[in-house]
Image (tube, rainbow, N blue to C red; front, side, top):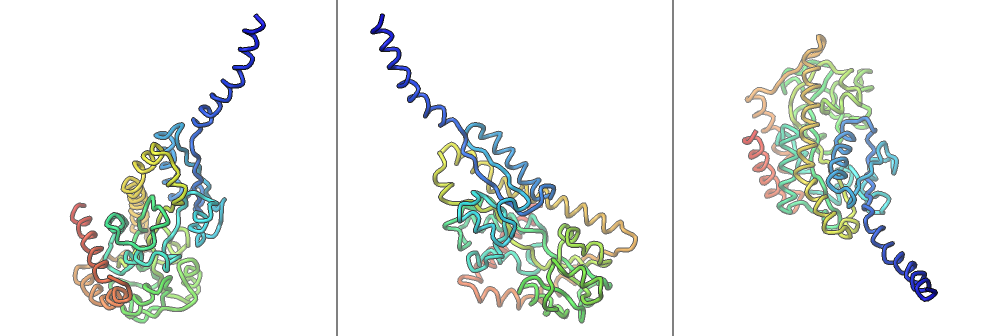
Length: 339
């Protein structure tokens, strides 16, 4: 009897050691997702729905935990750095904040090519699939997409592109500054989308380049009474993931993440942002004190001719720039034709 008790007592610790790793192995890998967007923003709502779907599919294997409102870092320019340093595993950010690292992504911001969030986003993802975008070797893009193209919002009537001549405009990027100049407007230094509304209200600026959705956030929607739907290029956006973290995931966790990312995530973005843009466009049209002017075919052709030099100069400044621009045009055309 004493021998039996001795054997049982000896086996219990060994059994515990065997079972302990099995128990801990069942814990899901938790990935921290950082965004500076507020919790109630449309972008954070998209990411939360995506995280919920991944968590549902990957129960016990992988879990996405959201940190919205800049909880892991408030500067939108540093979201890629958060991922690279390991503070976050995943982050939503803007490749145009680091054009030296992601120079090819700026092809989407060329004026008049992409005319909707869908055209820009789906075409950009296809460029990624074709491996035409530099800078992504040490970062895993779970999504590459674009904002809606900026349009003209003004305190003065802008029924057509001729009306832009002489108007004082902000310009948030060098490409926007060049586009504004070729169309006859005058870019004023020191202003961008984040501070132009106040300048417009004081008469320092006459117009800004911005989309409907951000115009609500930055108040151009309230200040401007005239809009011209001249698509002067969207901005690239992305969801970055730490490559080392991705490489260390189990095959099952990678399969779940891959299945829910890429085209799936791009579509979630396009559907939500496109719907919001349409909603705000209708709200603008319904407002009694606002005027919305669409581009006629003749106006669009004149605009394309005016900004052709901007596109050509950018292409010349990039290795393989001409081919990249043409491929982007081709992919945009495919998306447009499919809609």
